[in-house]
Amino acid sequence: MHNKPKTIMHFIKITCLALITPFLISCGQQQDKLSTQFSQPYPSESGGALVDAMSGEPSGLIAMMAGESSASAIASNIFNSLLKYDKNLELTGELAESWDVSADQKTITFHLKPDLKWADGKALTSQDVLFTWKTVTDQKTRSPYGADYKLVKKAEAPDKLTFRVTYEAPYAPALDSWSGLHVLPQHLLEGQDINNTAFSRNPVGSHYYQLDQWKKGESISLKRNPNATQGQAKIDHLISRIIPDRAAQFLELMADNIDSMSLNSIQYARIFPARPDLTDKIAQYKELGNSYTYLGFNLKRKPFDDVRVRQAINYAIDKQEIIDGVLLGLGLPVASPYKPGTRWSNPKLQPYPYDPQKALALLKEAGFEDHDHDGILDRNGQPLSFEILTNQNKEREMSAVLVQRRLKEIGIDVKIRVVEWATFISRFIKTGDFNVVLLGWGLGLEPDQFNIWHSSQQAPGQFNFIGYQNPKVDSLLEAGRLELNPDKRMIIYHEFAAILLEDSPVVYLFAGYGLPAVHKRVKGIDDTAPPAGIGHNAYEWYIPKALRRNEMSAE
Image 1 (spheres, rainbow, N blue to C red):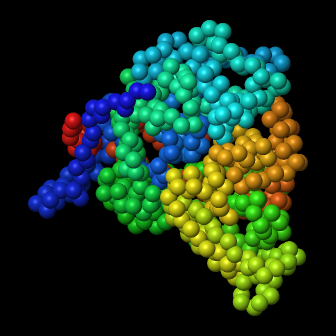
Image 2 (tube, rainbow, N blue to C red):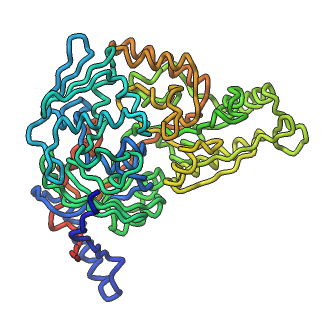
């Protein structure tokens, strides 16, 4: 194994709040002066550091193993895939210069760009792509993403710039899947146990950035990769500070200690409009995110194996109350696991209405009544009581409180437990040791959700951790992967969503808006966000020297 490289330098941020009293006036004057400069045009230039905040610390930086959005967010700056989505959400080449699809739609041949290198200077070739495919499909690899790539019946690298895959049958999500698999270096990982490798905390990639320093529980710092396959990014350093609490993140944003974060609804809708000093220096953006928040049941535990109990809980929760109270209206109710407004979202489906009487009738049918008159429903002497588990996320915590209150009104005793993200994943999700979780799913552009809902995807570390199984859903998910006609695929996924809604393995709570905030010292952001969002060209963002923080280097 390679030892972690010695940190070349770290940055000591000097902010107004960190200075002693005699300097407070001059520091404030300097900030006022800077705020008037943010709207001026500046030429693009390299250098500087961008600091953002993330709520959860990744368990590792091999995204196909971690399966977490926090891991993917960092790893996507370190590793490349064969393909990527451009700003208009069209597939284009990343490591691949071009690709060909055979007439029978079963074989894809990728042609890599020449002279690709890893950050350590070694050549990146098709052998690395082949090694990555072999790794993700290895039976010993505990990856939630393996199913997509196991459909490849043959993979080969006939020369250094050619990678070819052949499927048993045409596979509709094939190209999309190759935009989601980070290519790993064979020369550093061959012979290692990918499930337990130090590489996950000290990775070597090929993208714009490479790992500089990881301070556990504090921050992850990246520096520009001189061998980047896609050219050079403008900003020298990306620093992600690990701050679980969104309110604490916001304080850091206001104090000018971070440059960007994802706002919550209160910050976006109430605090910013009342603070001109913030809008002078911080830009706000609003976009319907590719995610939804849900209440998920452990279907392997009673009473959640009873569809009547799940449906009753669905009727007992007032989703609009959560959207209005937690999101301040900045969200939409959903009835399927797809982004509202897309062709994959079945327009005929409606969320379960708030109907506590219907909920009580279903629970009575399932055998739950308040036999001992203590205000809690019971069956065979066992009270209807369970714990909702969620991570440190204020919107989820507040949503859990509203769910708790509504369920108490119909006689269900609910406790809430909030845990740190890494513990949440390792201790509870991967072991299946929970009753009910309040979580969110991030969604891609491809409608295939085999990894989340197919009954075969229930092993530790896989995404169907709630234990859902329905033979009809299995067959629809299998058919959807093989259907190339988009209209026919739409019909398949509409039927899949309808069954899922009826089964209620989860209660859809809402689809929220993404509310990113970025300091106006950061330039190069599109004035009008394209379909891919403002971050599509983050490698072109730059921070003019005149607007950078004071930075001091130290060995």
